[in-house]
Image 1 (cartoon, rainbow, N blue to C red):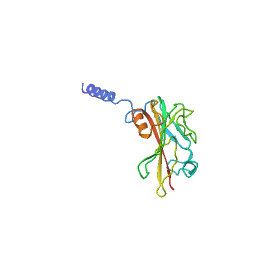
Image 2 (spheres, helix red, strand yellow):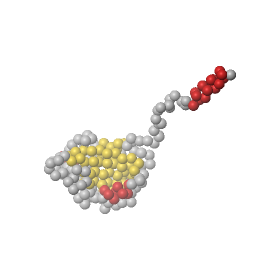
Image 3 (cartoon, rainbow, N blue to C red):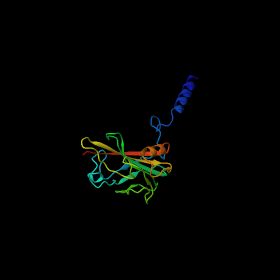
Image 4 (tube, one colour):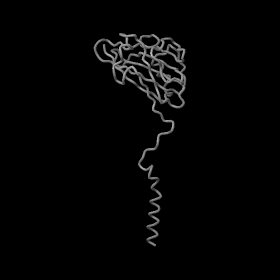
Amino acid sequence: MLGLLVAGLLLAVASCGGDDETQGNPPPEPPDAVDFRMTIGAFEEGALVPTRYSCEGENVSPEIVWSGVPVGTNSFAVVMDDPDAPRGVFDHWVLFNLPPSLNGLPENMPDTAVLVSGGINGRNSTGNIGYVGPCPPPGNLHHYRFTVYALDTMLGLDSSADKQNLLDALSGHILADSLYTGTYQR
């Protein structure tokens, strides 16, 4: 009788253990999980932004490429800003409603309000539309943050929108974002 009781207890303990392959391992990522990333071929993450892309050069926007786009992306937005500016964060570029078919932006994006390829340029901190390159006062090294957002919607904004308008509109619609930083010093 004692033998049957011990055998029953062992069987009960063994059946509570679960599959050896899943014990102690984290659950797998859902199949729609992504690794959304952006790169800028003109400079490495954290490195100096080449003069070509600054006010001391041609003042053109760099080529940006992104990958790992989340399922359900309906548009992209791009922001470039300088958190080290003397009077607070300076917004260099505000771009939104880029079509979901894009996997990046070419170098030297036009400074028109509405882009032929789709998308809208908003207002930077100078009050102008489009890209304005690094142009810090002489002295300290400044950091330039490029952020691309994958959104689940097109935004109801026009070219009068600035970065704050954009951030307010994309709240609750961000599927993923990616940050890439460059530096510049004069």
